[in-house]
Structure formats: structure tokens, C-alpha cells
Image (cartoon, rainbow, N blue to C red):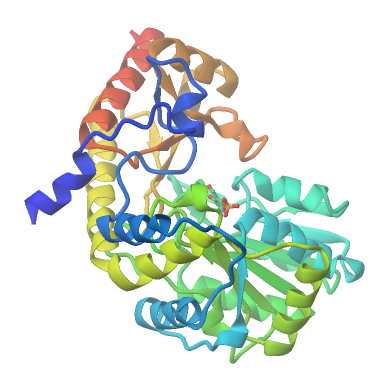
Length: 387
Ligand SMILES: Cc1ncc(COP(=O)(O)O)c(C=O)c1O
């Protein structure tokens, strides 16, 4: 067991691999930024990709029955709901899919509601469709974020879409069944679509349980779920994701719309990797989640013990910590610049909400050793203002 968990502590150099996170920074900088992981994916996935790469023709491809069956089995096994092939639309990325979903629906819509702070491309997929952003800021109660239902009830009407991020990036929340049910009830009352970005749904920390919005499909049909193997199995470079819509008529119409916009499904290697991940890498995923839970505990303990004024969110999912450093009174861009000078790259909290000017997002999907180095630099940075 210890041996297996150690694979996540093994150093893999990502330099000179066309890696956005490492290659676009100076050599000596350690990145804790963009959301992918700094350890190898499951050996079973590498094996299937290598086998496919041995065939020397890489022509046009398609998602075969085994592709759909792999998703159907995974969804049932991990999340307990049933789907059929007609519910699944293979796609080449979650952000692009969200953009097209808003485009598909926007004739009847004047605004999209988002729970902020939130993953920054949410703002662009709305604005690039010329639709209004309606911020429904999360309530921060002692670094635990919850939905402001009273405000949501005021904001919603039949001309809105709810764009939900669950698990939530950057706050690490996993919305509970009762919270999701309330959202679905409100959506149903006003007959609006809910787009649920569930890309982080496999990365559950400390045995938290995930509820997909598709669980509510008997109650309400205007639900679209977006997920992917990219975060779960560190495959983001393969640009392969899925849209799952339980209402077959909506699924058909949306698929036709995507086709008419030449929005295609994932590539040959992405399709191969998904099958390998869902069929042969489940144990790897569970071990990764254990490693990430340990890393989160290390991070939390580091700040709680040495710098208790740093707000660390209660992390239920994802490997992205959301740190409140507002007690330092420094704007995010300055924190980011100074941390870069000290040797680490983090994400500026203002990207996720204009109101989060004292926050940073810190990716802890790396080895324990790398994490400790990053934390020590965070400590040096905080000391430079407080000692
Ligand atoms: C919530 C969320 N959605 C979507 C994405 C990106 O998805 P894709 O690369 O499939 O467009 C990310 C990546 O960090 C994310 O955190």
C-alpha cells in the first residue's frame, strides 16, 4: 500500500514536454498553478496509449461502443445513476462545450447565473455569447462556502441559465444532495436550464461523496452535465470530455447543434485513454485521492500551525486550495509577482472574482516534497510582511 501511494511522490520532470505549467516559466520556478498534476498517470493508461501508438496510422476516428459502455458502467458504479448511449455526447473539452451550450440556449435567455468566486473561463463563455453575467456570490462562513439561496431566488426567472461548478473550483466545495435539490427546485419553478460542470467529480478528498445533478433527472429534465477524464487521470492534454443529458430529445438537439458548428468529439488518443481510465485505472484514482487528501492535510496543518491567520478552505474535493491572505493587505497581483521572485507560481485570486483581491489558488497535485518546498516559500513570503 505504502509503495503504491509513493508513486505520487515520485518526481517526473515535465520540462521540455510542451507543458504549459512548467515550460512557460523560468527554469527555477516551481508551479502550483494551472490545474493538472505533476505525477505520472496510471500505468494502464500509458500502456493502452503506447499500444495504439504502435499502429502507424492515425487517421479519422470515432467513439466506439466500448467507449460509451465504459462511461455507462463508470457512471453507474461511481455515481449510482443509469444512462444509455443516447444520453452521452462526446466532446473535445468542457469549456468549449459550455460555450456552445450557452450559444444553443441563448435565444431565450438574458443572463447566466454563476456562483462566484468561480473558475475564470465561466466569465468568458458567458460574455463571448453576449449574455449578461449574474453573480450569485457564495457565502464565506469561516472559509466554508455555501450558496446564497435567498439571493438566487431573487435573481432567477424564466430568462436565466444556472451555470453550476460542482465540485466547485476554486473553493473546493462539493454541494450536498439537499443543496442541489434546492437548486433543481428553483430551476424547475422557473423552467430554466442548469449546466453543471462536474469535471472535478472524481477527485473527492477524505471519502467525501459526490452527487451528480443527473441524479435529479426524474424530478426535472433541463439539466446538462459536463465531465471529463482530464482532471481525474491527468489527461488534460488529450482534450476529451463528455456531455451527459438524460433527456434524449434535448441531447439529440444539442448534438445536432454541435455538429452544425463543427464542434467535434475528442481525438484518437483521448478516446483510447478514457476507455483505459474507466476500465483499468479505478484503483489508481482512489490512491491518488488518498495522496491528495494527505497533501491537503499537510497544507492545512502547515498554515494552521505556523500562520493561523491564513484562511484555508475546508476542502471536500479538487486539488486546488483556496487561500485567504487578505490579512496581509496586499493586492493579488503583487502577491503573485513576489511569490514568483521567491520561486513559486500560484494563481491570483482576482481571476475568480473581482472581490477576492487577497486570495490565491494553490494547486497541490504534486509530490509531498514539492508541496513542502512550496509551503516553505509561502512561509518566507508571509514572514517578509509580518516579522
Ligand atoms: C471547473 C473546470 N471546468 C473546466 C476546466 C477545463 O476543462 P477543459 O480543459 O476540458 O476545457 C477546468 C480546468 O481547470 C475546470 O477547473
